[in-house]
Every structure is written in structure tokens, then in C-alpha cells.
Image (spheres, rainbow, N blue to C red):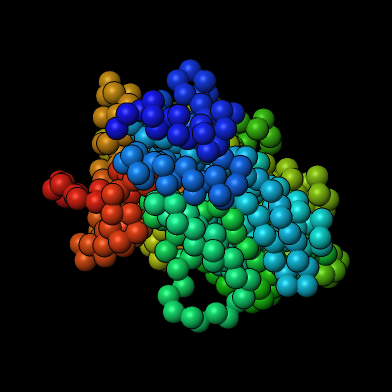
Amino acid sequence: MDKQVVIEELIAVLGADAVRCGDAIDLRYRADWSGATPVLPLALLRPTSTEQVSAALRICHAHGVAVVPQGGMSGLSGGAVPNADAVALSLERMNAIEHVDTAAATITVQAGATLQAVQEAALGAGMVFGVDLGARGSCQIGGNLATNAGGNGVVQYGMMREQALGLEVVLADGTVLPMLRPMLKNNTGYDLKHWFIGSEGTLGIITRAVLVLRPAPRARVSTLIALPDYASAIRLLRRLQAAFPGALAAFELMWDDFFGTSLRWNQMASPFADAHPFLLLAEVTGHVEFNLAETLQNALGEAMEDGSVLDAVVAQTQTQAKALWRIREATAEFPTQLVPLNFDISLPLDQIDVFAEECVQALTARWPTQQSLRFGHLGDGNLHLTTDLRSLGDGLSLADAEHAVEEIVYGLLAQRGGSVSAEHGIGLHKKPYLGVSRTPAELAAMRAIKQALDPMNLLNPGKMFDLHPSPTKAIQ
């Protein structure tokens, strides 16, 4: 491969302003939010259309140059970290909101549109988009689809897979798959779009999408609830789902370690006089705010009578609701307040509490000074555990500390058959542990799909799994 020839050909089809090399590549394109070591790619490509993406991939394919697709770089698994001998391809200039169809309840967007831009376009048309997460202002729809992102609204609307009616995808050789068909019912053979949702850019580059919208609720009420134990959270989940069929919009559980830390970081006082082992932030939606709040208060009152709820505050204004959500969204402070190792795990609901406690006990037995925070999207069985690597205090390098903690947590997870990635993807960080959640036969099928669509292994190579794996040490 003659690097200069490749770059000259790319400039010829994309334009000089769309191709950057060397020091002209900003640091933000060299690593995502995962904490992975930054890597300077061979070049950074910033196309403005599907046609340019296709042309760039044809050139790279002809020269055997790998391509690492990039969205908003807000991922936590290292999936968008470039390779030194590859080009990085950013979708940030392909950010158009192309069409909002209120009759069909769909929105057509380019992959570089931010999640927040899609949300705002939907609201402007009296609709809502069903996925929300803290990085909404930075993350991009293409990346959300490529990782099958979840977030706070999964309990009501599902993950990104449930929001996608159609995709446009460019394959490794530049072939465009025009799958932008806005029909819910379309049983014409394999539904190819699902191969690319959650594939982390290893099978094709998503360039455009047709997404589902829903009518915007007229009322939304948030409440912070104090619980005596984990089992009470499960009982309350079912109670609220029965009281608000299809309208429970969030059900976010916080262990006391997370709740207390968030209050301290936000310099907020607890709304409760006493400390409690579990705090829950719930949100319900409906058509009439008064009836919504009244129904919620009645449901909470019944839960208090049977001891499932110890105390609760219901937001009376949007300002109060935002204050409650600020407690839960303290995760945005992790990179500045901690040296965080983030676990994104899913398990059956009845195992989450026991598993979370097992992890903290095992980590404390190894490192008595360890500090871990536990929280999660309980409505969909997603536990987040974050350990501050600085708190271990035994002189380990960060890399060794990370490995040691992962061996403990994923070892316990393997015993329970859980998933090492509920919503953040595999990327580089979880790649050694994918076998915890996938059988050898499943991994072989995944490699066969990769081989069929990208036989030269040019799209995001080395992420998720290796096309030709080498033996790895099993977790004990």
C-alpha cells in the first residue's frame, strides 16, 4: 500500500477539506470516551453524502486499507478508536434531519445527526423519539444504531433496534444497500437491517435511517422513591406498570453508594430525612397532568401501606423534575471525579441485587479501600457498576487494576449466565470477555457473517472479535 497514493485518491473524490492527516487530526478523533489510549489514524475522512462514503470505501477496498467508522465518540467500549494503519471515517458532517412525516410517524435522518437534534425535531412536530441517554448532545444516530443503544426510555419504547424501520448502509467494497423502506410490515426475505444494528461498524457503515416516532405525551410526572430493599423495587415496578400500562417512561434504581455520591458531587441535600438503601427515580406519562399525578400518588400510597415504599417525593414543577434527574445523571461526572471502570451488565431481574452485592464483597475482600457505585435501568434488567480504580490503592498500574477488577466481575457474571454488555457494545474493552456471554457456536456464526460481508476484514477490524481468533485464557 502506497499511503500517499491512497490519500491523493481520497482527496480527489472527497475534496481537500474532507481529508485530514497528521497533526490536522484533532485529539477527539483519536479516542472515544472509554479511556482507551489515543491512536493517530492514517487519515481522517469527513464525507458529506452517502455517495462520498461509497467512493471512499471503494478506494480503501481497492488498496486494502481498513476503515474505522466514527460517530459522536461518546462510546465507553473503545469501538470507535482508530487504528494507526487505517483511516477514520467521521459521519459528523452528514447530520441532516431530512424529513419528518407526522402522518406515518417517522423521521428520516442522516447518521451524523445527534440524538438531541432528532429529539428536538420530533418535539417540534408534536412527537417524541423513544431513546434518550445522557450523551444526547454528543452521540449520533449512526453510533446509537451501531451499538443498539438503550438508555432511560427502554422500559417504555425499547432499544434502538425497536426504533428503526429502515437503514441505508454502505458495505466494505462501497456497495450501497438502500433499505430505507418505511413499512412496519415487510416480510420479503431476510430483514438485513438487523445485521447492522448492534454490529459496531464491523459489517457496514450506516449512513441514513428511517426511525419511528410516537405521539408526544401531554403530561409527564417524575418521582423519587425511597425503598427498604431490592425486592420492593421489583414489586413497585409491576405495580406502576399495572397502574400506567405502556406509560411507565423510566424506572431508574440507585443503590445508596451512588445516591450519596451524586448528592455530594451536585452539592445537594437529600429530599429525605433518613438514609435508605435504595432510591428509585420513576417517570410516568399521560394526557392530563392532574389525573397522572393523582394516580401516581395513589399507587405510591398503596405501596407505602404494604411497606414496599418508605418515602417519596413527587415533582410539582419541571424545575423540580430536572433536579431529581440531575441526581441520576451524575454519571456525566465520572470521567472528572473518578478513574472509572464501567460495567454495563444485564441479568434476570431476580439476580441483579445478589450479583451486585457479590461484586462489592469480592472487590472489598481484595481491596478494602475500593469504592464502587451501583445503579441501573431496572425496568429492563440493566445493571451499571462503576469502580474507581484510584480507590484500590495497592500500587497496581491502571491497566493491571482494570484487568484484575474485570476478572472478578466477569467471573461472577459467567457463573450466572449474564451479558457483559447490555447497551454499550463490545468494542475493544469487552472483547476478551465476549465468550462469557456467547457460545463458541454463536461466535462462529458471527464470524461467518463477518466473512461474508467483509472478507478482507477492512471494517473496524479488531473490534468485538477477531476474524481468526487465537486461544484465550478462560475466566475461572
